[in-house]
Amino acid sequence: MGEFDLIAEYFSWPVQRATLGVGDDCALFAPAAGQHLAVSSDMLVEGRHFLSTVAPERLGHKALAVNLSDLAACGARPLAFTLALALPKVDRDFLRGFALGLHRLASAYGIELVGGDTTAGPLNICITAFGEVPVGQALLRRGARAGDRLWVSGTLGDARLALEVFRGTLVLPGADFETVRLAMETPQPRVALGQTLRGVASSAIDLSDGLLGDLQHVLKASGTGATLDRDAIPRSAVLARQSAAWQQTCVLAGGDDYELLFTAPPAHDDAVRTAGAAAGVAVTPIGSIDARPGLRVVDAQGRPVLAELRGFDHFA
Amino acid sequence: MGEFDLIAEYFSWPVQRATLGVGDDCALFAPAAGQHLAVSSDMLVEGRHFLSTVAPERLGHKALAVNLSDLAACGARPLAFTLALALPKVDRDFLRGFALGLHRLASAYGIELVGGDTTAGPLNICITAFGEVPVGQALLRRGARAGDRLWVSGTLGDARLALEVFRGTLVLPGADFETVRLAMETPQPRVALGQTLRGVASSAIDLSDGLLGDLQHVLKASGTGATLDRDAIPRSAVLARQSAAWQQTCVLAGGDDYELLFTAPPAHDDAVRTAGAAAGVAVTPIGSIDARPGLRVVDAQGRPVLAELRGFDHFA
Image (cartoon, rainbow over all chains, first blue to last red; front, side, top):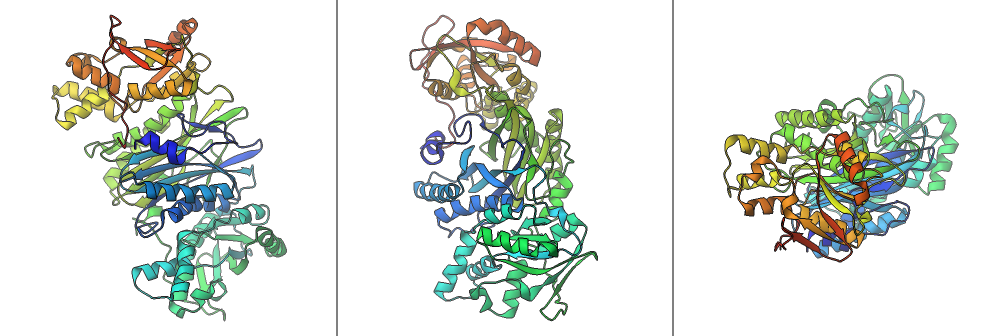
């Protein structure tokens, strides 16, 4: 099968909203009047962002989900995406599954594959996703202010827990493993929440590299510090059954959570809860933004927790 | 050096036109009113799209140039791009050179790096480029009509000739090799020509996979056939000194030319020449579009040339 057959068979979906999709030199589309285009690009490499054991369908889901999560963090509504794919060989089972997972998630959000590239090479998936957000309403990292409350969506740490099982550092009962493996392999981007938080949150970021590291990006961009209540960080029942040490590692430095971390003034507490309810996602306060620089991690009693953990860094 | 330091040191250029560039979850920008966004995404893999012998600066140039070439083929004006980069290790010499080549070409077109991703992994470069084109004026593959003349910009075949030297199938004098190597490693996207051809050309495509293969995309999209005059295809002085067989292979199935192949009604001959002159690029008629399906390659005397050559296909 040649490159063009491969594109035709697996990746030429009809476009509706875009003017021109797969099959020309460029895709053509436009955000609506008064909207900015929000663009996110993520590259997934085997062993770094997924394991060779992942089912192709889940990989297709995840490759798009991590980009939609970036759009969500900006409060953008997804529109379209491009896919560039390097494959060691043409593997129909892989392609069928991958395309299915991709298509299912794209369909759930009504977005279109508008272009891209395929080539032979070590497995590599690069998706660039496009959304639109009303001019001036995007949620940015730099908007956190002293006195704001710090919030997170969903629960944190399950993906890291699953990774540790794959690494052999801990063992889970089969059903528990399946639960956390699903969290790792099919993250649910908080697309609806990002949009309901527009005008409510003062800053937002998606959690991809671990809470501590990603929070530090917000603090640096905003020129603030924060106090984080370790014990308030929401976690699944499976994670809550693990040792205190594993719980701390997974919630603070898990990575691959794809939840939204955001800030809002306390006067917006009700609006935040309403935004979460409207999006069907739990939102939990986990700390506060301080004028004083630095990130202080404390326990439920307010005692400092020594946390030398840093956000996951792909070259660290 | 961590991932974030790497981005900060090499890839955080100030943005002017975009609202938000590198350093948040998404880039934010918009095409001007009445303009469509044109999007192209290309993935470059070592051994397929470049050789390990290429200087990093030239690789930076080429990775962006191949995307700008796609924008040119649509008649779009480049605006911005994202870069996703997988690197086996942090290599400062490589990064410095790569970023320099990228930056020089970007600056030449006044475009901005607005976002992207870096990760550890087998060397892979994925750039997604954005341009704008007035709604309804994009040059598409599907616009060729019977009776149109077939045109090409610049000269074809030098990149393929250089590749054959690297492959050891032929030898060139040093100065000739440097000339064709430059064509292979630092293609010049025909950005100005693409824009001057708006309203003049009936269809366009950029030549990346070889003239025969790319022309067939146009014919398929347009539902037409064509007659191509092999001997009219412009070639450099270096290529013109090679054997007739090598000349034919290089001009018909070279690949990596990054010239524009386009069609226009004969009534537009003068306008085509004016568009070429305005863009400072030679444009040469090389055949005609036929109502009769199929691609006929003939010599200067109109005799059929048996050409079973097909366009380069990355999985063939």
